[in-house]
Image (cartoon, rainbow, N blue to C red):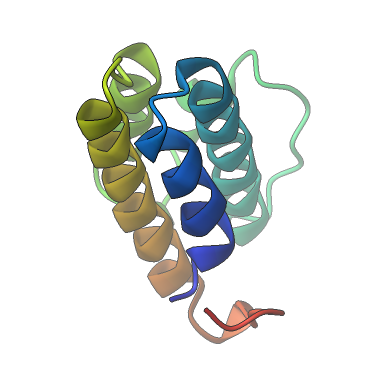
Length: 111
């Protein structure tokens, strides 16, 4: 799985109902995916301040990316079940970004 480098450690943290570290993991993944979208759209990433507004104008981005990221970060959950479901949804979003990248994405690790 292309997003396994994110999903595996985040899943273990979520299964332990460790909200603090799960949310930290979610934030790192969201930041990386956001920067990938900037690269795919050949747009220089300046800061997070207007990133979501700019992504909504990008021709190359998964449908509903901003809404999905916003929802996941706003309501990650408290229980291991809720946190694990959030990781699953983030992994699906990651796979959507990888699919858009096509041959530009070459995974360094195989999971």
